[in-house]
Image 1: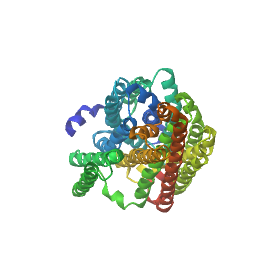
Image 2: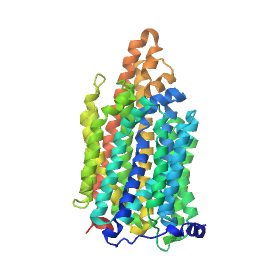
Image 3: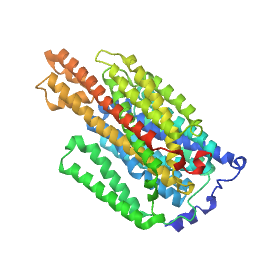
Image 4: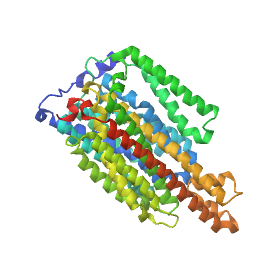
Length: 524
């Protein structure tokens, strides 16, 4: 198969010399940066743009709380499972070729999402969309890492981080505008024309690169790792609904452990021919940035999911209004990300990453300033601190993730780095979402005993007003109890998220070192 692919792509398979003068490579580099930025914006947007459309999705597709979580988690699940696979295949088969294929899958799946008539169809399409996104997430940073070196790489990843932050932060605003204006389906359909244009530009403008002397595809490793990660993430996603000690969840956790152990044995036997360079686990900085990425994304993305739900379902904001209210976080994130890109060479990476996690922790803890009578402005301290932390984190994270490996294995390094990011997002949304649902349900049941479990679940899903309207003479009491349960559950869970981000800061300060990075990533 490898030989066939090589023959089909031989005409444009030109490996770029990383030591070539910048003047001879500038046009290709500019196009690569622009196209990867477009892809990154689309992919990160799809992680957050859906949040503000969830109430409309719930009504249009008659979805429950679990179904709404799956709209986010189906995407994150397949993203996590196929990231390392996408990066490893790109190193072997050609980064441009795999990147274009991933764009095609993502674009087609976006069309299916927009045409979905029920929540099951939507979630299946979101899973396919995540496969395409995984390829783009993994290969995009590798393309940048191959084209840029030293200070130029810092600039490129500054743009990359800024675009990532822009998409995360502007997601609620864009999602609100599309949902309020032309309907929720367009949060997916808007990807289609942009994706088609990007595929054409990628085909014409990005230059091919691959690992010199690449081995054949490690199919055993690809299969074991993808299935193991899917089982692990699925266990976290379904743990609350099925019961954490249920046979299904315990079996999934056990399967993930066994399959990961088998994967490591296969990679150790294959050595350089394997999809994962096991020497990375002896790199202190690799371990540190991986743990920090997982914990930081678990805390940060779960907080956005819950805060958007609070602004819409408790404060009563429309999708567009919710997006506007998150502008302080948006602008802070974008400005800080743009500034941080120029600092990734000048300042120690552990200082940037550790400070970013500290700011995020402070922002999440500041959500304790809100109470049941607060307006949205009480969230401003939290938004500003959290936005600064998220903006400062993305550029050095992406650069460090590929800097721990030699340039020839950039796809693999980017894939494993993005894997920790997406696993963190999936586990964070699932785990903290389940904890939130449990806290809200218990608090509401204690305040208004005797109501069915469906009422508890509805309050956690943000439908407290609907429960109150059906409560007859107890309407006022139920409405007040639902609001209080939601707010107290939110602040309790975000306090735990703050502790997780603080732990990530400690790990970053203690483990990340510039000397562990490849020379091409440091500019020294």
